[in-house]
Amino acid sequence: MPANLKDLRNRIKSVKSTQQITKAMKLVSAAKFGRAQHNVVNARPYALSLAQLTAKLAGLVSGGSNHPLMNEVSSKVAAVLIISSERGLCGGYNSNVSKQAIRTIEALEAEGFKVTAICIGKKAFQTLNRRRRVVLKKKDDANYLSENDYVANASALISDSDLVSITTPFDKPTNAMATRLSEAFAKLYTEEKIGKFVIVYNKFQSAMSQIPTADTVLPLHVGPASVEAEPIFEPEIDELLEHVIPRYMTSRLFQTLLESVASEQGARMTAMDNATRNAKEMERKLQITYQRARQAAITNELIEIISGAEAL
Image (tube, rainbow, N blue to C red):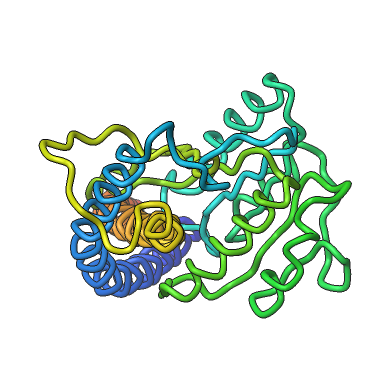
């Protein structure tokens, strides 16, 4: 058999193997996406209701709220939490959030802030490390934070380094994870070690649509709320805000984590579906090329046989 036919058979076999892999990855992502989408949809009403309650309470405080998380501080250090994935093969999910992060960092630096970027997921960390030429932190460095100690070492977030990596199993975000993160950044803000806290992530729209978003969390802006009649609160509004605002901040962070996971799985499912379709199309074209080459080889052999017979 001619060498080109053997090469075509090897390519067809390789494409079929790739197609099986991408199809399996699509099925896995589809299962994870279903759960992640369910979590996002179910969490949104609670997050919205808590935001409305916080806005209503803050609007009823005469002269505005004195809660430390709602007041601006003098620090010119900004913390940017960037949420990406640990693995690739999810379309433009990581590149979009990395581009949004770079735009956000540049805007903050233009405002006079010294920016510290904290990455959940190594893909954004690698992109920022490459684009902004920041030295990669290793596990034994003081600024490398693992899942178990990143809250205890929250003060290490603000250092001479511009980039810190947090590694954590991120497929299943929990409220406890969001609570630890919110407490860590709230402590940094109340101690005036940071003057602004921004989260950069992909907001979930659908399996095929994720919107890169930069959400300013601190200082806390809850927005206006219309109150038809002034209610009576027990305990007092200020005391109630002390309990509601930390829950509201945790809710925002938890919702952000859920949106990021759903966006990642939706993007990966779509990317693997496109890859499977492309593999099928490539296999079809290679099969046509193979059959044509095979027919041409057979025709050439017949011509040689007939020519030899006529010569005899």
